[in-house]
Length: 318
Image (cartoon, rainbow, N blue to C red; front, side, top):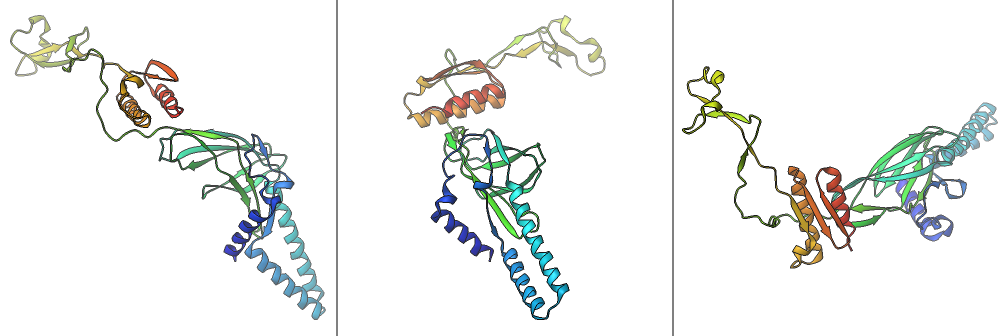
């Protein structure tokens, strides 16, 4: 029965213009009202209606006033539940859409911010690319619902149509509405799986040597030629061999100045994938990076915000 009702609703949405007039993107905020909320009986609701008809016929046939009163009470309860199901959606507002961060091919967390009207909205379900999440909004309150949006390609990806529905309170009626926010999310490019490291100007390919610092880095075993003033006498007294204070510290990591023009032998998408991989590798070890693109020149920096800035710039490339 439920499958038959679902097919009927899909057919009605395709055939009846009144049900499909909200297929065009809408600017925020989006408010649900009586002209865009639809309601039909559920399978349980239709079976309950048939039961009431049987009870009504039996009460009239046997002139049973008690059975007739019970049938009328249940019928009024059914009508009231239809009104409650409608009010659960009426006045609900989609106020904002917040996007997360995701690489192409990975799901992106999208947050839908709903606000309530002058009454509470209980047991609302939001259906987003076959993913369903239940929530409730208090009167004049706000609720944030997190949904996973599948991604395929880098760049701007529009949000799909979102279905809001409720069977509250008794499951006798199914009330639903569609919203189509005029919003797009920015998907980061997918890094290449492997490849060479960037060419650093002036790099001779040798291991960076250590340099003398002012702070003690560690204690090590005495080697011939070490100055006597560097011997840690107190620590050496507790060991069989002499220990020396080591002041040598590794030099700071080199900077990666990534340049779109240095990858002229690659096609544009391959350039973007390689730059994305280099940015990810630099972010993993905290290496400072800069990025030159035809549309933007990002100065030297490091950290998560700098990485996101660079990845956003790559995602926006044509």
